[in-house]
Each structure stands twice: as structure tokens, then as C-alpha cells.
Image (cartoon, rainbow, N blue to C red):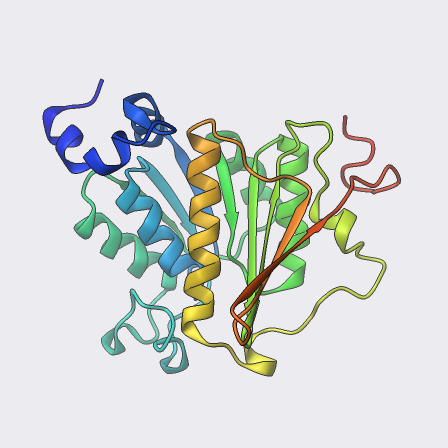
Length: 250
């Protein structure tokens, strides 16, 4: 049951048929791991904490730089050289005291994945490098933990949901096998615009809330956003039977 204060605070969400009090309780009980607290992880963590998610684990080994500030909106100039996960966890805990936050101030590796994934209900991949993306994808498939992937460069963004609890769900490796040329561009090579990150992070947060409240999320669908034309495109994908990550997992 929700307290009177929670009912008032989250009233606009509770009145939605697809959320209701049961969904809000589910959000309060949820534990989410956000990998990467940069341009995507900043707004995504704010949206999830504000929506009432009870526990957030924030993983990032990077320190804040001056060039981060135009798009990593939780950080201030006085935070430069401090760890991103530590600063974000502290800010979120002050702004949203109902949300328990834990900082993981190092880059995620397999050992950390194996420790944290059994503790959480869902993972948001907000990382900015392909090696980490493959690692998280494989770990989530192995642990059958739902995964919401986001990426953005320049004016473009993409979002994908992987949920290996569903035997039909394709994974990131199905789309971009590591033996083939996968996307390697990032904001350090071609730049990025902050509002594009906000749009993709908002889409990730929306998918996460839908999954946590037992609403349908769009599996096997790659969503591409073009900020110049302000258009979304959806591409259907299939689980690859010969995928070395998810093909033989079910």
C-alpha cells in the first residue's frame, strides 16, 4: 500500500489505468542498474527517481570534465574531476529522498555484472562504448534481466529493448554481431547535442517504467531518431538462431 503522501505525490501517475496504485507500488519496490552516468544516464536517472523507482544503482568510473557540462545536466563546474556516479548519487538522494541510490564508481566488468544483476529488476545501458555494450548485453541475457539500450551521436539516437525472459527476444549481438563491423562512432569523434540525449534517455526511462509496471514494451524493434528531420523510424528484427550470445540460451 502507498502512504497518503505517496498517493498525493504520484497522483498523476496513479490515475493512469496502466499504472494505478499497483504499478506505483511496483516502481517503489523496483531496483534498477544504470550503466553510464553521462549524457543519457543523467536525465534517465532523474526521470526514474522522479517517477518513484525505489532503488537506483549508478555505475560509472569516469570523472566529470568541463566538456560534459552542456549535456550532463546534474553536474556543475565545481564538480569537475569528481566521479560521475558519486556526484549523481548524492544529487539524486537529496532531490528524491524516497529513492535509495548507490554509486558504483568504477567501470562495470563481468564480476560486477554477476554481482549486481541478480539484485536488480532491470538494466539501462547508457554507456558510450561498444565493449561495455556487448558486456552488458551478454550479462543480461545470461541472468535473464531486462535491458533497455540507448545510444546517441550528433543529431541521431537509437533505443532497443532486450528481454531474454521472452524466448523470442533478440539481443544486441543479434543486431550487431561482434565479429562484424559494429557502430564505433561516439560523441568524442562526431559530437553530440544535449536535447538528442534527453529524447533518447526519456525513451529509455519510458520503456523501463513500462517493463517495471508490467506493461508491454516493444521487443525486437530498433527505434532510430533523426533530430534533423524530427522523425522516428522503427525496424523489426529477429532473434538469430546462430547468435553466440542468445541463440542457444533458451
